[in-house]
Image (cartoon, rainbow, N blue to C red; front, side, top):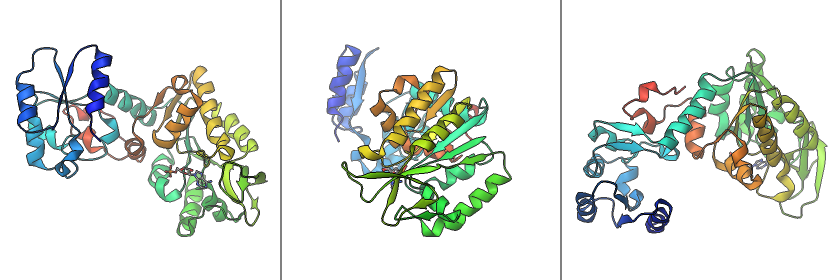
Length: 333
Ligand code: AMP
């Protein structure tokens, strides 16, 4: 967990010495900082070695703040947590500003939500409805198209009366799934579900797969990816979109037989980006999938914060962003 190797790499990248302080507070850090000259660069040891960091301890935050004149937060990936180094410190600086990465994240995620070019589509996947419910509720009515894949499809499928075999089911969310389908009908958002599913009896690299209609997954089979017809349907729908947000894999993409749906979404997004659409990937698994396809450069923006981008899409205020001096200029919706 030490940042020591990071200091070495940073020295290499910057072409100058980056000094390393073995602790982020205390005499060594103050000493090194006190001796700094114009243009010097010092990396402090990982803040999380101190439990006070995640507790947002004000004494710890004050000690950190004594090391600088201006605070720049470039950690979008931690902005959804009010920790000493993201929120606490800002109480002790007259100027707390966003770094370039933070600015970029807020620009793309913020603009996509606040002022998207339409049609505006969201592709949501991942294991469970329960993990994405706030995102779905925030996006219903905002997006023109909501394409749903991943394990959460099957709770919706059950809500529609389909047979889902041994697929992932959240029994206690069936009613909620029904409500989401109903709410969507009277909103401007069109919900789009897969029409076919790649299913198997087991999740492993040599699993025998079967493509089955979404309405009829046989007993003993689990739905583990969206099928080829669904990929074509999603392609057809996404081609119309001018702005797309993607969060969550379409299937168990960590396992090759069930990765195609997720990789196909990455390719479709790369394709529409080349035709002028704005495509934003919300970190985590979907970002990992894009990087596996080698298409990172072909999409508009890939967020570096899985949890933070999810909370952003949920419409929540990120404490690390709200604490910045100019936060009123940030579109957080
Ligand atoms: P989440 O953290 O909710 O975004 O879920 C990501 C996880 O969902 C990944 O590890 C996928 O393997 C898993 N997942 C996606 N589709 C399915 C599915 N059909 N059945 C079970 N797990 C799935």
